Length: 380
Picture (cartoon, helix red, strand yellow):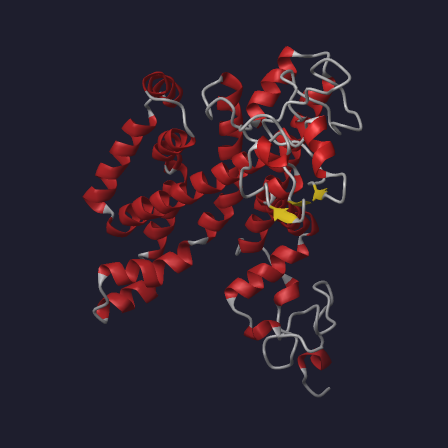
């Protein structure tokens, strides 16, 4: 199968090829993507409701619709508990059937039929054990990872938009705008973020939206410094001066010409920013200042592990998920930084066809080999 020649690859394609050469970074990206996709389908993999069932000749989809217990021969009109032995026997006998997820517990499901007191160790019922409230630990980790990952993605996206916008305006216009903006950033960054979060948490009901707002108004400053520095450097280059001479407007010049050439620090910054966002959410949940009570949280599980040292499975499995997540993001960031670093020599993307500027390695010459007249192509 023919491959595209390196000489005609776009800068993005060359960067992707260099990124794939970093085995740790590339497979970290693949593994983290798989973890995120699996967590997005957590309801299908871990839930206390059947995915689909047939009862008395009719089909039901409890995962998408709530049914009363009386629908299946129970005594109450409340939502059916499909783990109740009586209901379970009714929906799986006499020609009836039900397809359950692989793990038959949701993040809030309490195993009332556990043979051991809570927190219970890993068993055939709860593969990773239960927490101190009797909830399945595997379901808690699966849903908690999704909350943390989506929160990190959202906070990173908001920080990138604000950081790029503010940094670009400072770097492009420079002068008084840059000076005034830097003074405002210095004052804003000196505000005690944790104390502000504690005060607002006492005034308003804790929510994911409140956390996003508070952390977003502080999370853009690190990236804006990188973008500002890139714009200050690129605005002095010849192609920018030529565009100005041709009458190109400021906004068109910023977003169509300078910004694409200033995206290297932005892209490199993303995995590190996301890992910091996830760590911040876990730390706030550990302190009780994060997501509302009842929301699956890795920080809450770490706090439970601290308070239940004899239940080793809570702390060990939660800490393992945290370490793997942050390690994968860090390895991705390192690989992106190397792939986008213009100071590095990447021999895998050098042209190989004669007449396009072949390298010394491709011509068979060593850097330590003296150049003779024959090597120069001159007749002896």
